[in-house]
Image (cartoon, rainbow, N blue to C red; front, top):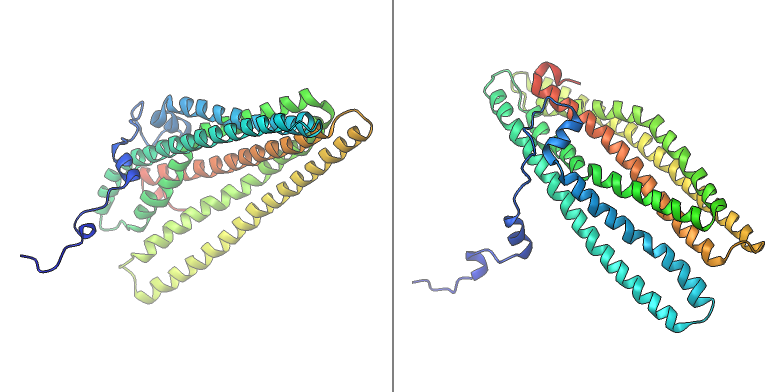
Length: 344
């Protein structure tokens, strides 16, 4: 008989709502047989199927709810504040709050949906890679460092993109189109200034992405090499340490190059967005002074330009992530094909 009272929390796990829900969710079954020797686009389609369209529909709903506050802000200023109508102000405030709540809930659903698709894609890829990894492990000349990297971070990167691929593109594209259409409807002159600040960003991103892809591919190869060196038992310890330190230094230098390009691009895009906001403000201010528009319209345009620049930045991030995930997927396919294809 026990002499001390046992702590219930030490004998059985405490009930957890998120854990209980997660245990009931099953991974997505591929819509078609998946092979890691097909194109990246075909891999995404075979893993996710029609769910990419379903999550895209949810993404469009998020876009619509995120678009409504632009018009509500204009109405608050022009219809409530300008006329000193407190009742109208309270009604619009309540509508704004309801839209914000619906938007937040729908966006939460979108994030969970995207995460489920991503983790399902990761599981499917690992199911395909596991037999290859087991076969390689039996070969005495095969190092396990690359296997760990491929099954770990590399598959996570590819699967994470699969979860958000189409839905992120849909939500940001539809957001840009809806905001731009609204701006054209309200005031075409200011809308043209807004577009003039956005378009150059796409050409700039496309120009720099090629250099980023080269360094991403090199980084993957270096990390794989480091993994092999860390588990190398065939060479002398001093030689292994020297090679490992040299690879670590090269990884550091390559990562710094990535930062210089990546954050240099972000800085240029931020400057372009700031100049765009200034152009909208100056053009709108001129139209207000000349009596061609209202202050509420200008405020809506400033807010609208922010909602235009945000999805623009997200689309550019999508393009960068897609390009890098495509590089990573190609290198995984090469690794599956044989050791000779996995070196950087």
